[in-house]
Structures are given as C-alpha cells and as structure tokens.
Image 1 (cartoon, rainbow, N blue to C red):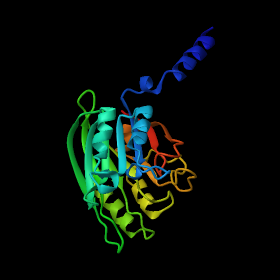
Image 2 (image 1 turned 90 degrees about the vertical axis):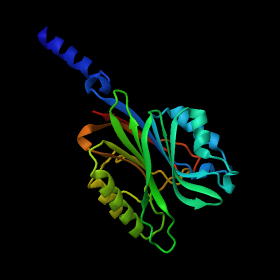
Image 3 (image 1 turned 120 degrees about the vertical axis):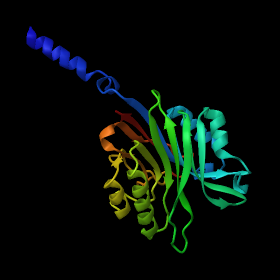
Image 4 (image 1 turned 180 degrees about the vertical axis):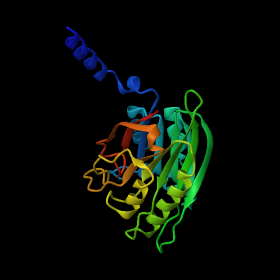
Length: 259
C-alpha cells in the first residue's frame, strides 16, 4: 500500500509543469534575422514577420537586418510597424547609415524597457560592414531586471572580425552581474573558434538545435541564443521554426526559466 502511494506520488510530481517544480520566471525568446523583411520570393512583407511574432507569442524578440526609413523598404520604419501590430515595446540599434536611412538590430519586448543602448562591434576587414549589439534592460514582473541583447556579427569568410566581436561581447557582458540573454545571427558554425570563445563564457540555449540558413533548405547553423550567469537559468525547450518563406534565415525560439 505504501509502495503504491509512493509510485503515485512520484508519478504526480513528474507531471507537474517545470514552472511549478522550480520557482522563477519563464521567458520566451525569439531570435530572427529578417533580411529587411524581404522574403524568399523577393517581396517586401513585414506583415509576414509580424505573423510569426504573433503566432509564437514571445516575451522578447531579437531581430537582425532591420531597416529604418531606407529607400529599399519605401521609407518604412520596420520596427515601429511591428510594434503597432504586436503592441510590444521597441528599441532600434543602428549599426550604420544605409540607403538614406538606417540598418541594424531591433528588439521587441512585452516588458517595459528601463534602459537601452548599442554596443558598436569592431569591423576592420577590407569589406566589413559596421555591426553592433542592441541592448535593453527590461523590468520583469516582481521588479527584477534582465538584460537582453540582439547582435549581428560579421559575414565575411575571414573570421578575424567575428573573433574580435565575440571577444568584445564577452568582455562587455560578463563584467555585469545582471542576468543576460544574448541572441542573434553570429554568422559562425558550432565548431568555429568564435563560437568556442562564446561557449567559454555563455551557455548556448540552442546547443542541440540544427541548421538555420538558408531557410528553404538549411545547411548551416548561424543563429544562437546565449545565457549569462548560467546558475540562474534553465532551458525549458528550444526549437528552430520550420518557416521557409518570410526570410532567408529560420527563426529560433527558446523558453528559458530564470530562477
């Protein structure tokens, strides 16, 4: 009788949702290189990106390759348009002036943004583009604070800039005690030196995930979600969404428990 009761109790515990077993805040994060909302058919479709955000219902979104009032997107403020559809707070981190507007990284947040800034990343290669990390501090329920960053690293075959950019991100974020989520397009595969550097300081919430680029038939994993202060985090789940049209990258999403 006692043994049966023990088995029943253990079975019940195993079926309790993780959120109930470990106290904390579950945060859903989406990372997406949106290719200035030009889809795989060569059409501008910011609503297609909005639809993915609405369907997945994330708390925080890290976007890369976002245009702000450029000629190629007909002067649209892409992040503002996404905010109008989703009702989320926003921050745009401009990496460079481009086509009579700006080009960089975007953040959308369900949580109020307390602070925002951009971190310029080193770009010394002959054909390098300016890159940055957009960073916000958000206020979670209960008034605790969290840093969230959207980064886009260099795209050239030579890894020198990506290595320098990774080193700067490590130096910048690991000196701060606040819990951090760093997401984005790192333009590097899992066995590269730059990813090895990042793994030395951050936890890869997407470690078990497959390829993310190109979206129609992906052959490379370029998109990641990193966590700092690893003892504060538990990865509930993570997945690459099988979205093949809206951008040339597939979106990556993770549910993260901040203890």
